Image 1 (cartoon, one colour):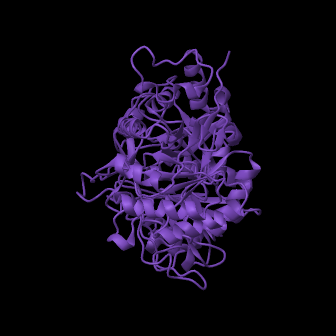
Image 2: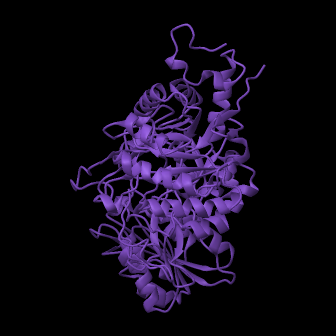
Image 3: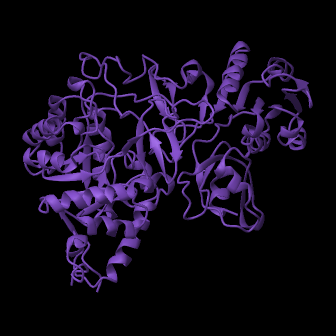
Length: 271
Length: 315
C-alpha cells in the first residue's frame, strides 16, 4: 500500500525500493517499473521482479503487511497519443511490466492495443491472461517454443504491425530487444517509444550512473540520465550501437571540440 | 535550551554544519524535491570544469558492502552552463553554495576560480584535487603535495578574497598530513576530507572489472572509519585549520563523530542516493544528538575526541 504513489502514478514510471532492512549493508535502492496501481485498501502499487541477487532474494522473502521503504513514482511516463490510434506493445520477460498499465490507459483513450510478449520459456511469460483480455490480439514468443511461437519477440512484430495497421510501437525490455523493435517499427515507418532498463544507484537524477547516449532535437548527442530524463525515450533518439560507450561526437567526449577552443577538454581522463 | 547550530568555516558562517558532498546533490534541483536547500548549511555542487565533459562509459557503478564503487569521470556541462543555469537557480533557493572545481592543470583551476569570482553567489570554492595531472603521467594532483599546492595557490590567487578556498584531499596518499600542510602553506583556507577511496570490484562471472573505467571510488558507510581517522590525524597536526568532514555519513550521530574528530562541518554524500531526504533527516537527528550534550554551541564539540577524558563533552 502506497497511496501517494498510486495516486500520482502514470504508465512507464518506476519505484526505487530499499532492500535488506534499515541496517543493511546493501545501500542502494532497486528500481522496478510499476506494473499496476489499484485504489483498493487506500491505493496499492504492484511491481514484478525476478530474483537476481541478494537484494531481490530479500525482497522475495517479504510477506504481506511487511513494511517496504519505497520512493516514487520516478521517471518520465510514456507519452500518450491525443487521438485513438493503433498501438502495439512489445515486451520481454519481467521487463514487460509497465506495458500493462499503459494498455489500460491507451484503451481508455479509445486506442486499439495489440500485445507481442516474449520470454525465455512458458513459465516466464508475463500476465498472458491480462494481455489477452485487454488487447485486440496477443502474440507470444518463447526462446524454447514452450509457449506461443518459438523465437524472438521482435520476429512477429512486423506482421502484427501490418495486420493491426499500427501507428506506434511501445517497447520495454533489454537494450538489444529495444533496438530490434525500433528497427522493425522504422521499416514500417512508425515511431517507437522505448523504456530502457539501466542500472542506477539513486533513481532521482543525482548519481549520474545510468547515462546512455541520446540524440537531442538539436542533433547533438548527450550522455543522458535514464532515471529522470527517461526511462522512456523515442526509439530513434537512442544510439543503441553506442550504449556502454561515450560516442566520439558526444558533447564533452574526449577529443570533442568546443567551438573556437578544443584543446583544453581533449585527451583527458578522470576518475 | 536548544544549542546554537551555527558553524564557522574560515570567514563564512553556515546556519548548521550539514552540507551535501560534491557530486551527491545533482544541480540541487533533483534534491530540492525532497529537502529544503535553504535549511541545510550548504550545498556543494558537482565538480565544475571549464568545458562540457561526457564522463566515463557505463557501467559506472557497482554496489559494494555498505557502499558503492563509482567512476563517473566528472560528467558535467562546463562552467558556462553552470554560471548561466545552475548557479542562479541555487541562489534563488536561498541556500549557501559551495562550488567544487576540477581541472587538468593549475591554470585551468585558476581560470575557473577567476570565472566563479566574477559571479555573485559563490559562497566558497572547494578544489577537487583527485583529478589526473597530464603533466605527471596522469597521477592525481592529490598524489603529489607539490602539485596539489601549486593548484591551491593558483586558485587562491585568482579567487576573490572573500571566497574561502578549501582543498579536497584523498585519503589514500602516502603522507596525508604532509599533503594537508602543503595545501595550507599554499594558502588554502581549509580542508575537505575525504574524497572517495580508490578501489576496484571484479564481476564474479566475467572476471572483468565491474565498472568500465576499471578503478573507481569507494564511498558510503564502508569508508567512514577511514574518513574519521583522516580528519582526526589532520586536526591533531593542524588544529587551527577548519575541516569539512565527509565519508559514509548516514545518521546524525555520524555527523557528531566527525565533529568530535575535528571537523567544523560535515558533508552528506552517498546516502543521498539511497535516501533523497537524508540531509533533512540527518539534520534533525544531529540536532537531537547535540541537545543532550549540554553545550551552548556546536563549535564547542569540534575536536572533542582530542581532549583528555572527562573534558570531552564541552560545557
